[in-house]
Image (cartoon, rainbow, N blue to C red; front, side, top):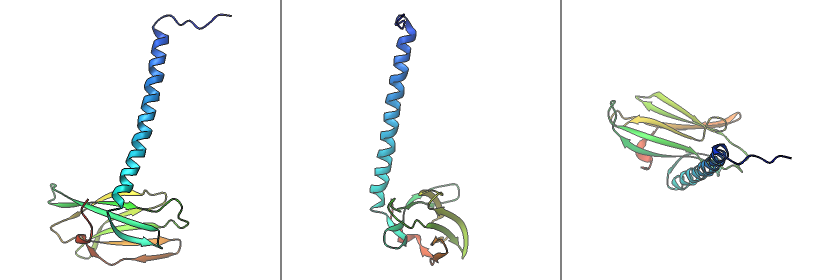
Length: 151
């Protein structure tokens, strides 16, 4: 029976490739865990702007940003529904200007739990949050972005 030829460059190249893949996979997994924990820590200090029952909340924070459209609020939204929740509703965050919805962002199961939207600082934009689960739901009233904490 012949053994594997361990002479030459090919064998060493294979070992290097396997090592690089292993280190890359471990680094990616660590980064995903770090990102999730960082988001959870940030969510603890964000504003709660919507809720369903006692354990399911929509949280938000805002950051002032300049743009070619003028000064904007960059609004980060987080559906803080725990995995253990038996009811997982859909949240809808709307930005209003002069009484009309100009932007709609949905969060929830199958849609995404972390999203970003924008609102004008100068044009008097407001927001509302609605929540629905099955046939039940509630629509919120317009609120000022002053009610949302800075990130």
